[in-house]
Image 1 (tube, rainbow, N blue to C red):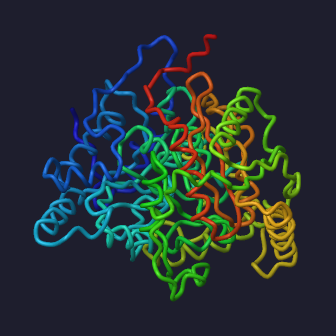
Image 2: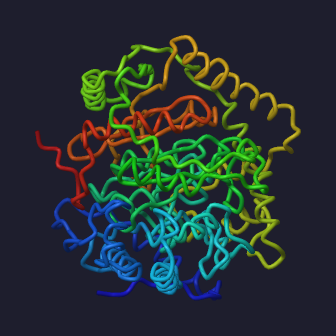
Amino acid sequence: MDKPETPISSPNRRSFLKTTAVAGAAAMLAPASAAEPSPKPPAFELDEMTIADLQKGLSSGKFTVRSLTERYLARISALDKDKHGPAVNAVIQINPDALQIADALDKERRTNKPRGPLHGIPVLIKDNIGTADRMMTTAGSLALLGSIPSSDAFLVSRLRHAGAVILGKTNLSEWANIRSNHSTSGWSGRGGQTRNPYALDRNPCGSSSGSGVAVSANQCAVAVGTETSGSIICPSTTNGIVGIKPTVGLVSRSVIIPIAHSHDTAGPMARTVADAAALLSALAGYDPHDSATAPLLDKPAVDYTRFLDPAALRGARIGVVRKNFGFSDAVDRLMEDCLAEMKRQGAVLVDPVEVGPATFGDSILEVFLTELKADLNAYLAALGPAAPVHSLKEVIEFNEKHRRQEMPYFGQDLFEKAETKGPLTNKDYLAALEKNRELSRTKGIDEAMDKHQLDALLGPSGGPAWTTDLLNGDRSRGGSSGLPAAAGYPHITVPAGFVFGLPVGISFFGRAWSEPVLIKLAYAFEQATHHRKPPQFAPTADLKV
């Protein structure tokens, strides 16, 4: 079994563009055919183990941090690199220092008490999250090859402080899926196409594609994704895992490649609500370099695992957002089963609840593109003169120059539109931002919850995974991400069942800073249903009835 590849510290940019990029953009892209046998990997000792399971093994001496790290690295190799494996292509880069970090944490465990629940736990992070180490931070783009920020992202510092082992970085929809309206989720010029582990010819959704697949396929204990609108929730639902999109400001965005500061957040992706809550506890906190976290100043740290209440559905008032249903008969049937189970658990369902506008029109895009230009230019400028590119304009020029590697399937129409936008003082932008917040917050989630005295709102997280189509792009349908994303409010998805073997999630969302309530409800639903099942790496979905 081949060892996972490790990046060289100072890559030869020109050579890489001539060779590796072509492989990344082409060789990894062909989906498995229905005729080939399912390339299932060998049994994995750590399959479906939770953070609590791993900590128990570490405490008993069954595992060491190094042995856990070695096992997960081997799993990554078996699923991503082994020519006889399923090639889900979730991990874009291995941390060359992972085993050294593991050894140091083992030594610390022998001489001191563990730092907490994440001490020695292997974690993967999305490749738009900055690390000041020997890994690059590229957002999947060849334009940022060799780019290493001068400091860790704040959340990375918190993970290191908690004792996590950062195994590496995950592939993503390039530039977090803001380059083009015609993109294919899970594809990047640097990393190629990530594949859904439930059916390899299906899409993993995005933009946190690799994080969702890696968690689902047991390539790590937990992972970190980022979301502007749906980029944690969608890959979580399509890969059968739990995803938490926090309130904007609960988790710092500093040294994360941005899209739009009014929407952007990072958040946990895990196989269980308990693991997601444990990871959120480590990620959340005040950062003086991110003004959105100001409400957390002088606030005590929160242990979100305190809210894991299996009886939380009893008496809870939950609003059913029916306008988010109806895009799939099969998903609707699953949702009805979920609603029935929640009633059996004692939930009070207010059904239906009208909430928010039918559409925001062009105001969301106006905010995204205006903030993209300002925020990305600021991020690139902060990388310093040695950075490969220094502005959105230079990224656009790079993509044109390297069109064969960067734009073989879709272009950069959204980048080009963003480059025409004015500053953050522009009247059109400010009006759009105010409109979005009023419709999603004051006259949206807040109004509906006040009117019906609700603890949370719910709807389907999205449809089952669609077949990956590089020529025509994504064909995703439905979901509940838009409103909480526009509001900057929290949103959790939990596995809700399967449609022809493809997972579907159910969403709980609500007011700003209501993560404790949503975690309670999500955990109670999870414990009542246990819908999570690990993927089997089928070459295609079985549509037999």
